[in-house]
Amino acid sequence: MKKENLIKQYKAIYKKAPTHIIRAPGRINLIGEHTDYNGGFVLPIAIDSYTNMLVSKNDDKKVRLYDLKYNENDEFHLDNIKPLKQKKWSNYQCGIAKVLLDAGYKIGGLDILIFSEVPEGAGLSSSASIEIATLLSFKELYDLEIKPLEMIKLARKAENNFVGVECGIMDQFASLLSKEGNALFIDCRSLKYKYVTLSFMGYSFFVCNSMVKRELVESSYNKRRKDCKYALRAFHKILPRIGALRDISIEDFMKYGGLLSKKSRRRVEHIVYENERVKQAVEVLKNRNAKAFGELMYQSHLSLKELYEVSTEELDLLVEIGKDEPGVLGARLTGAGFGGCVIYLVKDSCVEKLKEKILDVYSKKTGLVPQFYEVVPSKGAYAELNGNR
Ligand code: GLA
Image 1 (tube, helix red, strand yellow):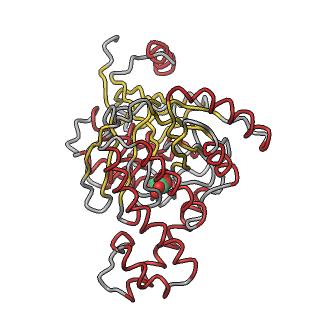
Image 2 (cartoon, helix red, strand yellow):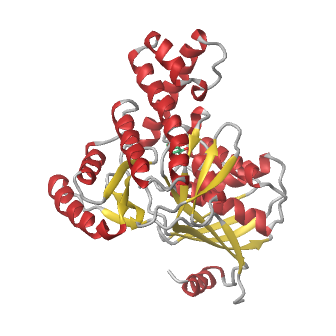
Image 3 (cartoon, rainbow, N blue to C red):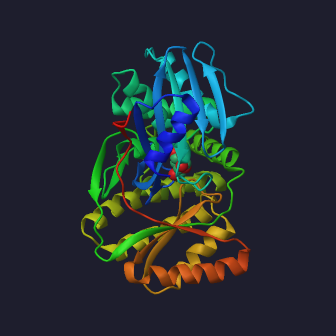
């Protein structure tokens, strides 16, 4: 929807103009899955789909919300914030207000209109983009002195406490700090990060949504986190210097992995080698070696399927289709798994044929109609003043 239209809708709802327009993108992860909450490495990029928030202040200490996706409104008072049971969508804003207040930031009321372009339930971090957009709204309108890393940590805390997903830090990080044309390499323990230019001449990333809704994602995701905690405890007994699964080297794993239970061994093996793949991916990206990058993607998918067990038949099918198509160098599920999207690395001139093939084979086998998104590595969240008041 165009900016002018959104402003019109805002005026119709709130009888005033918004002072700011805040935009925060969704993300895809190129490689490094389920490593973030194990203190490891990830390599996401922001996509050209944003959650847009039009905002202005109010003096009532209330946060009023209207979400165009649901055509619903809601509101809460800053003196009385509780997780809302029925209208789950506004828990994100409640969560952000609560973590800011708890951290001692002085905030007041906001009148917000939300229009998100990020598809929901597709593993493209629509939640993180809403959290970051809400946080940036408070920051901009109430002049909060808050550093980017602090924003990211608070947004994650809101998701953990209010929405109930014990997510890692990658999505909020990518939504806030991504840079156009670049991937973002993050060390999720030290929170140090660096940008890596994306320049596989003639090849690009491209996303296919399996359209499998990730109904159980929250509980399954939290289960994987528990598996990791359990495996960490076991490994720590063997090697006390291990403080996170990230600390386990390939040599450690080869030496001591056999002492773990079968399930723990599978989980740990994924994390150990996936971290290694992210480091290699950064190198091959720098060397513009698209073929090697594609190989790492296939390896990552196989590991997510067989060791971490977060893939689905549909995601596997999408990856297999890629393997047989000329011009496709790699494919893997992106995000938490259990449904959502597959990302391909494909020669520009072969994208159309790949789409046709997917539409044909995938739709016939599953009865689902997949959706495609072009990937434009985009910039992280930003605020604009509304000049048209
Ligand atoms: C979700 C979480 C992230 C990360 C990925 C898996 O997107 O929000 O923190 O754990 O799953 O890599």
